[in-house]
Length: 81
Image (cartoon, rainbow, N blue to C red):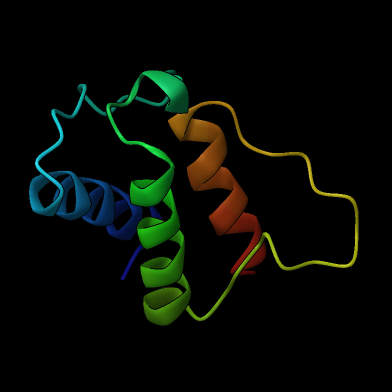
C-alpha cells in the first residue's frame, strides 16, 4: 500500500473514531489546522508504525517535525525507503 494513501486513511479513520471534524486533506494543510488533537496524532503514528513498519520519530538523528500534511507524508515516505 502506498504511504500517502495509508496516511490519509489513518487521518480519516481516527478523526471519525474520535468524533473530530477533519479539514480537507491537502498537502499544504497545516497539521495544527487539520482538526486532529495530540491524542489523535499519537494514534495515527502508532497505527502507521504497525501498518508501514516504520517510525520516523524514533531516530537517533535530530528530527525536524513536519508542519504540513505534505511534510508528514514525506516524512513517512523517506523513512519507508
